[in-house]
Length: 243
Image (cartoon, rainbow, N blue to C red):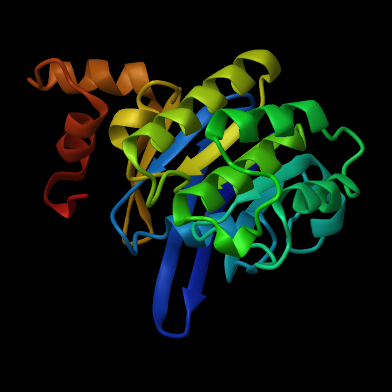
């Protein structure tokens, strides 16, 4: 799916979360949006999901405004929120059946297989799961929808190292098979480096830099950086804005 973000401004009272933001997310890319807390990453995800109307600019997914055409788009978009949320009394298997009723292309076998790999008991209530287990369930629900666009808001936040690796391994496998467009915010620079094709760095609602990861590496090397990892790239371009 194609995402158009041009001159987008989004405010909360006197606070400007996004300041005339231009962002290019190529179709089929894995775009990692980086930035410290409060940089505007989650605000952009909310706007793309149609949860928040921008105060200015153009924001479209496949030519449609998500604020006005949310119901037309949601069948092709899956998302994971920063804080995993579902009815706490609902068991995991029942949650899967409930979500599947809204999606014609539901991958029931894939959903069950992920839960098995993650070691999550399907008979347990969602509210009884650990924070990390909840995040893995929500990711499994999102991937089982076979979306054309996947929006992930810091999907590894609060996960232990093993669970974080599970997340990126699952994404690598899924994206190799489908060519899904992915936009994700993350603080896990080491993990996302394995799969990101493009990155953008936000600071106080403004875009500092964006582009293909390999192009940005070459630019950093030309400026004197040595063997740039994604973490070193972040600090190279963000400078004192930090992570």
